[in-house]
Image (cartoon, rainbow, N blue to C red; front, side, top):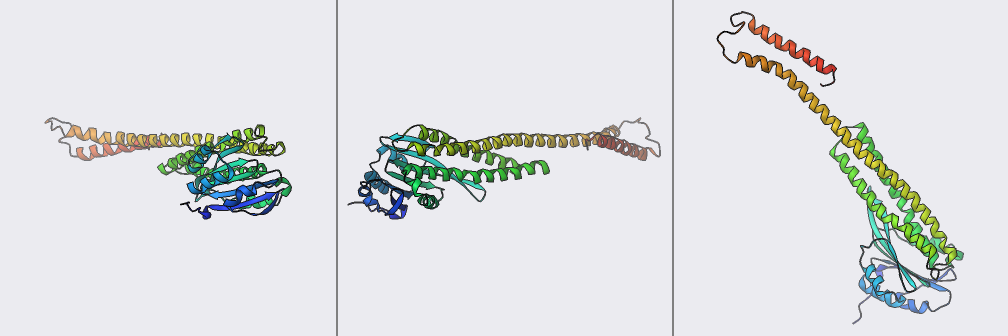
Length: 329
């Protein structure tokens, strides 16, 4: 018995001829549509299951290893060649309540088709498709231009994430210099650094992917389309420079935070030492009079008690103001 395909995971499947849409296509009819001249199919999937991917493999003639990777949603960013088709993995990112959520987009690219499989946190590609359909002359160059549009869209979405991380850093940095250091601040800095490292691991491989698409695979991506990926690589380099600057500022902020914390602890230790010195005066005097010697000075003097108490208070007050001037209290 044949397993039923879950069509809810198929976002849209459209055939294009000479850059113009000729209508939606069912998954079962893809192989027939691909037989037409100057036609390619753009298929978008969301969280595709094994059954749907098996059908996609049958319709497009995809490699087993590429399908196996597409089934697993935890892949590193990469590009791999399987015969006359390419398989790519790109990581997506966007902000949700000031936290970075990551996802993956798996891409199958051939001379006559483009298949995207989105996993996790990722935005719809409907705007990309609409923008490409508004440029039929560019879309007539084949699925390579559609691939450029998708990659450009993913890279553009990195920018608001970087801006969001920068805003969080500015708040934490202000907390360091305006208020006393706290555990919450250092935890926020550490969380920010971890998200920045995750974002770097998602972004940096895209440069290598763009370079490979520019230099190789001319049978799938025409030379006049390959130059578009240079723009994506330049965009990634600018983003990487911004992340490097933020990473250096994060390290500096952590060091400043620890320095302020050390200074605060030193102030506390100095205060405790100052009060300890003040308390040492009455402790020493009263310990003398607690030894119960028979012949002690001033035992028979009428004003011995107030004189001793007054002397202790006077010495303590003088020591207090001396330590106060020196910044110990």
